[in-house]
Amino acid sequence: MSALNYRKFYSLSFSNQLFLFFTAGVLALSISASLVTALFARNEVRNMLITEGVKITDNLASQSVLALLYASEETAKDVARSSLAFPGVSYVMMLDRELTPLYEEGEGIEGYDKAVFEHVRTGSLINETNTAWHFAAAVLTADSNEGDLGAIYPVNPDQELLGYVYVSVKKDALHRLETITFANNLATALLFASVLLVILHIILKKITRPLDVLSQLMGQAEKGHEVTYAKPEGPEEIVRIARAFNSMIEAIRERDRRLREHNITLEAQVALRTRELVQARDMALEASRNKSEFLANMSHELRTPLQAIIGYADMVLEALRDEHLLEHSDDVERIMHNANHLLNLINTILDFAKSESASLEVNVAKVDLKQVLAKAEQAVRPIADANGNVMEIDSGGIKELCTDGSKLLHILINLMGNAAKFTQNGHISIHCVNYGSEFLLTVADTGVGMSLEDQKVIFEPFRQVDGSETRKFHGTGLGLAIVKRYCQVLGGSVEVESAPNQGAVFKVRVPILGAEHLTK
Image 1 (cartoon, rainbow, N blue to C red):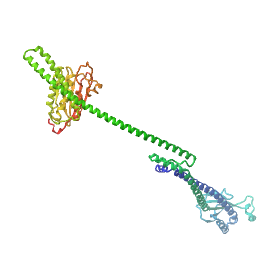
Image 2 (cartoon, helix red, strand yellow; image 1 turned 180 degrees about the vertical axis):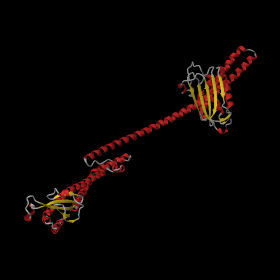
Image 3 (cartoon, rainbow, N blue to C red; image 1 turned 180 degrees about the horizontal axis):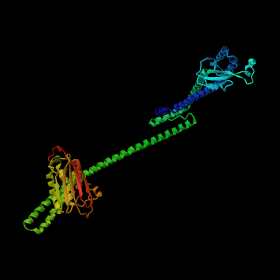
């Protein structure tokens, strides 16, 4: 049976599989019984026909004494035809003692083995083919089985051999009997098998109907449909299965009920938590806006008097120099230096407040890169010179690019200022590269560097590598936060590569807006 037939068989219901199995078994048993019965009947008939053939041969031998004794063909002919009159006898032959045929009649044979006749006395089966049996017998004088005719034979105690007779009997009767017997047995067996299968089918249906119903209910449950309870009927085993199924359905319904109640509770809790989160988010946004507005307002309010202080200090310094009162000029210069430092801190806070504004705008225009780099260098040069640093600036041959020049300048000033502040007697390099649609700005220094843990927090507002009150490097901790914010606004990114005491490399990637206008 092929794999496809196996799949078809196993796809049937249990009752159909069982019925097919019993049908195949009953049919096999019927055919086997018919074959065995026909075989036994054949053997019985065969033995009977062989016995009859032996008797016909012996009878022919006893009647052939005179024909062989006097070599009379006429007598042989009469005797032979009397034997041919028996059903199935197809060939008769008489031979003298030298095995020379005296008379033969019927469907002949293709030669015969003379050696076989030398050992034959009474009627015997000497050969059997698919179509016939072949018998032979010796013709003897003074045969005790010859009856009254024995009185005319010469008396010879040694029973003188006169010759032999040969008889061929066809198996047609045996074959017909085999066919009829097998057909009758098979028909009878099939009749009884049909009656048995009908009764078996009724019984199987009665037994398996509850199983089929239970299987359908299980299929509905598997598909998620509403399932009714199974009726506990049928054999005891099926009743137990149905009760177990009902218990399972009851447990599933109870579980579904609890799940629905739990889902309702969860949905209510999620809705409540969502409202709370929305309120917390709105409050945080409002606080952030208030903070930004406060920083912007306070920075503006603080910057105005500081600029006045710086202006008046500058005027006093010029007056002292004109009056040649140089011993007091150092104090005024300290006032101006600290005022400028405070002003830079206030400007940084103001820039951060602007960068956090939701309405931060991007003004795209053609920017002279060398001019932007020169402005950044001019702003950072005092810090670099004070720390003994050497700055190297390479524009990469780029003359103009389309971006927000103001934000690019702020990015450069913050990165270069950071490098100048954290590097002592070192080297600072600024390189620019154009990748077609992207602008790469690299600021590298040979300063103190930072660990991997510090790199994770340096872009957060108000976070510094060393935040202690005794830190060596002062600042607000907003410069890199402003850089990250401006890079995001421009659609770019910033990343850092550094290690302790090995300097740092900041890489800024910014898309070139309107790159078709770029000229080199």
